[in-house]
Length: 472
Image 1 (tube, one colour):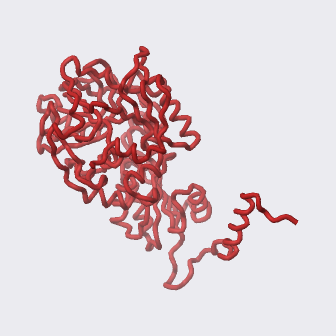
Image 2: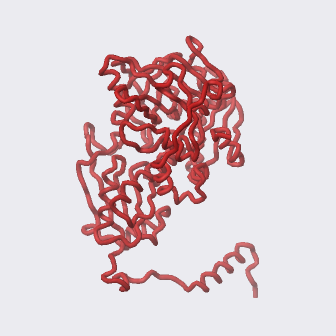
Image 3: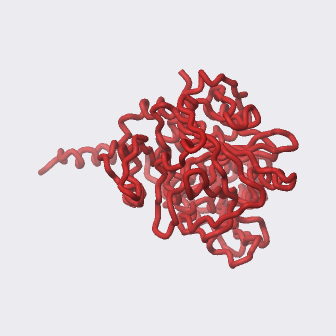
């Protein structure tokens, strides 16, 4: 059976919290995610019968916090150790598996078709997540467009504010491939065709976040990460020009009319801050399709739920970039507390100058802002271990690299107004290389205890924990 959101929820039913009916879609679900984030707890949340601003309940359940757990998200990919995703993701997304095209009869997402006035965005139980946000947003909608010159499609998660029954704003980041496609259609004097699909297996969601060249379709990468061909079906409005996942939950189809912008935001971004109000294209809705028992997927914007999958995809991208210049690279970690600005590189016996090569390669990636390279003995998933390396293996005048005027993220709240480039830093926290083969590194040995003493200590600790500590 093809994997989708339903198969994932069934496989991980023990991680699902089914919430009481009647929760408000305005702030309440997001407030629960904030509370869980603060405690380091990451269950999947399913809410049925949620209420809108007018108190109306919906028959479409909401699932959120789907990818808040890094352990569970790695399990969705079939990776037993969440710390070993970078090389796996880089390899699987690059290799890819070609999609397969199915008919409408084989596409659960087209079981219900709503057109005309029935294609009402008010049917979608979108959330208003944070204070000062102007209304309900689609946060897990994958916008799919295509390049009018080549016909090659692109997919990316991009927010949409539901403004009325048949119109929503749509914010494609200005440097995104979807924004390129939009501008090309507008330059031709045409509206931009677009379809937004919502809800699928986490492996599909992550596969479509692969960082690719332009133009390049995400469907092969999604199949590679999923481990099977992704089933696609022609959209009803755009036909084969825009394909959508047959196993998705909901699809919203329409056009972005030429040179039409509307206010969008403020909106809670992955930085943890509210992004300012900004002009954005709008999308006029032509059709909504969905499963007969559709589930609406929401990402907690700026929360671990949204950071984990994209950061894991970013680890794969950085692994591929850095490995090309630093063969000693073993692993990459993009930690959630650093949003998408920090990255830790783990190297094994790098040659002289190789750690710096790795740092420069990683800093060249638009999102990174601070990159640290460490040795293989440092656990890059432990902030305590990283701090120890920074404290004991770094002389700032020797080991810190600061590079100005590199491309950065326009969402970085530390940038001054109007800035288009960023200042970035890399830190080489690796030990000095050995002066000659077989010669110890010129640093003090790490303080350790013998193996047999460590084993005995574990036995004593277990006894104390169990209350069986020997007494006089």
